[in-house]
Amino acid sequence: MAKKVKKRAPDFTLLLATLLLVFVGIIMVFSSSWPEGIKTFNDGYHFLKKQLIAAGLGLVALLFFMNFDYRRLKRMSWLIFIVSILSGILIFTPLGVTRKGARRWINLGFTTFMPSDIIKLGSIIFLAAFLAKKKEKIKDFTEGLIPALAIIGVSCGMIYFQKDLSTTVTLGATLVSMLFVAGMKMSHMFLLIIMAGLGLFKAITDEENRYRMKRVTSFLDPFADKSDTGWQAVQSLYALGSGGLFGLGLGKSRQKFFYIPEPHNDFIFAIIGEELGFLGALTVIMLFFLLIWRGIRIALNVEDLFGCLLATGIVALITIQSLIHIAVVTSSIPPTGIPLPFVSYGGTSLILYMSAIGILLNISRHVTTDRS
Image (tube, rainbow, N blue to C red):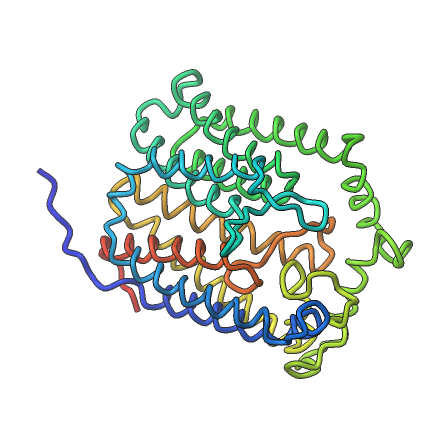
């Protein structure tokens, strides 16, 4: 009989890094959303109030999952996965809401939410449980790889049908990273990379989605068409460049006045760079590094495979999404709409990511590493 590990205190460094990111997010959402709040809702505090409510609910969720034994999630994984997929199907019912040409929200009357965030966490939990159960067959093509790919395909497919390619890529890379950690064959890994590359090429060059190809071509030289296809990248670079070392000062961004689209969401890191400068942007990046480093330590030191894979999935999701957001803002990859975890405006995203950190903190209570 395995020796029971005494439950310990959660990882304080991970908790602190998360709370600091959420705090920075609240401040920057308020600063970057003020012009949009005045214009659209005649209330500059509109987005701040909603983000504060989401942060409060997220903190409750974090504390709940921090004290909820993560091993119970393994038994509940089927139910969690089905609920997450059903939430995605609701998009295609009358409850689905279209905003700015995309149908990605569910309107319940008293609130709206994005099913894609629920699908991300639900699929990570379900795949972790599946891989832990099939640990002896992961290298087998028919009994290990194919069923895992079916789970990944269903999860990513539900998001792709919402015409959200960036989130599809983020989740797909996250789930494949879990499969890699679980012990898949390298030959299978190379096959997946080739398939993913072909799928991405098809999605970009599809005649029905010509705007994606325009984003790629404009990325090569955004200043060549800075009034149209290169607008987002150019305005983001202007924001970062004008921030200098110390920034223009909190609240003094110029690009948030309807130059940068979605300054409180998809391009919030550009506003951070403009108002807080290189040092402010670097501080945010270092907080993410700190969070990711502690998450990796937890994944490496937890004793059961389910906990390891679950921690891997959560850390990979945060890492990949953060990298994509910062890469878009710095014009390192073609522009796409994806929020910065814990920082960007968005109630569903903030609550789900804080819940994920709660799960990670609970896993940390079952490992014997130093938590300082």
